[in-house]
Amino acid sequence: MTYLIDGHNLIGKIPWLDLSAMDDEIELIQALQVFARKRRKQIEVYFDRASPGFSGKKTYGNVVAFFVTRGHSADDAILARLRSLGKSAANSIVVSSDRTVQVNARENRAKIVSSEVFAGELKKAIQARDGEGLSNDPAMDGKDVDFWLDLFDGNSFNK
Image (cartoon, rainbow, N blue to C red; front, side, top):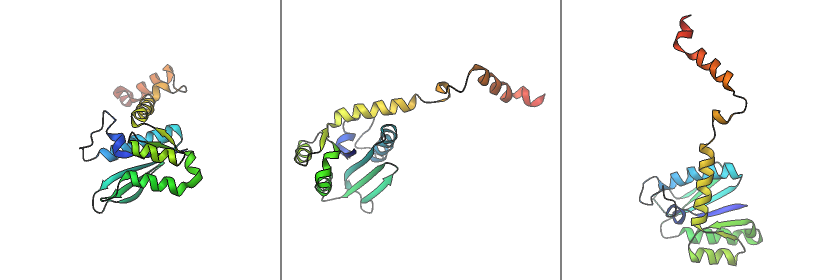
């Protein structure tokens, strides 16, 4: 399953992102990288209104970002992608709350997830990542921690 995401539509539904911020697209891409890694999914995200010189396709791990030139829309790019997939569009999930995008997705047999619902899934994936660390490592027990604390204690090097 590949996710086809209407980027600016999704940014508007994520509380910690702001459409007026200079780095809103990069922040979304970073969050999508976490989601793609955790869920083992491929993601294509489409942004319209690309600045001159910044349009085109850019790959960030399992996330491919399409920066659509001014005068065209992410909606049109998503529809073109669905059409190019033909029957295999049924293996895609379109993420958008835009009614026109949803209608086009349905017509091409793609699954639809609203940006609001996906924003919740994205938040869960990010929170799961934040919970990882040494404290959850079953190979590390209290004796190991004491050993390393003693080793790196300033007095240990003076003995």
